[in-house]
Length: 457
Image (cartoon, rainbow, N blue to C red; front, side, top):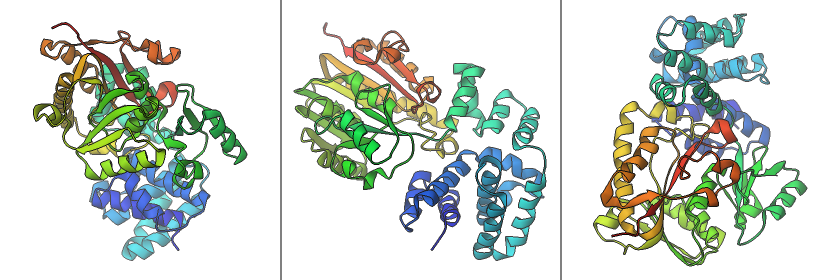
């Protein structure tokens, strides 16, 4: 039987050598062993934390190596990174346990390097200077303010530079810190089958600390992790897993029972199923996506939640308009656009290393194309909501302003205030555009804008 650290190593090696997504690699290895709750938590912490803090870890490792970090064999590099993460960032992990297990693990997977790994890690652990001071000293030598913050908080320079320009230093530092915090787990209650009060009561009976969401009446914030998919209320379709910020998207659309709705980038279906619940499952939702597997997940979710108003279609959302795949005239269209994902770094730490600055322009072009198509499909007077899970203006405000400045699209800003909580409504720009950041409410980062199709010819 493999322990928590060996499973963490296996997942991290898949990320390092196989370009696997962190969350999928972790799910795969956890599925191979029946670990207890404590070991599952340790494995998860090591995997997510090591990927998240990769740049800072490499800076801490460098003084103890005679060659560049990237020149190390991936097996050795993975063991060193995950162990330095434990030594540097986990206060509850005994140093001797992390060191000994690292050496024993290396003996199994790369025996000829065990002495090297032992020497490097013992050198690292003997340095008396606190880790924070070591990183601060390295950051002080950085060439730019962005590089300094990138070393301290473990982000690529280009991402920090963009946020500095957009938010200023104080807000950027708050974002960088928040992006490294452990993500909370939140549930959306299926109000067609139960109530928030009933689910909270059940959680209390089971000894799981939870509180009502401050942002959404159907939201519940869990104070510790739960294996939700194995939980009976989840299997019974009483709840879904969804970030509290994401719950506001359906609220901004605010479809009424009997509406005809289009979700142009629907899978895996969190927002689609929320729209159906919002509509009391009365009316119709055409759910479009280009990923067959993810559409399958959407259909499974609809069945689990008992929703019948959703119809799925495998297609590119842009083709719905240009190829006439579906008749237009929708009461509401949601464009939950593909984006750089820089708002969900707590859940997807690998995104900071996968994305490049060159991606942003091509994503913005795709987003404009989807918004252009959506504008032809919504009826006059209908609602169009544009949403992303990123924090870059180029993919958010700039795309919406482009749409408003394109007369042929016939779009205007809509008033989102009646549809959102008062505290959030105060953050709206022009009463229509909302940017949620992790430092504000502890949610993921989201952008959403409510637009209206003009009625005049």
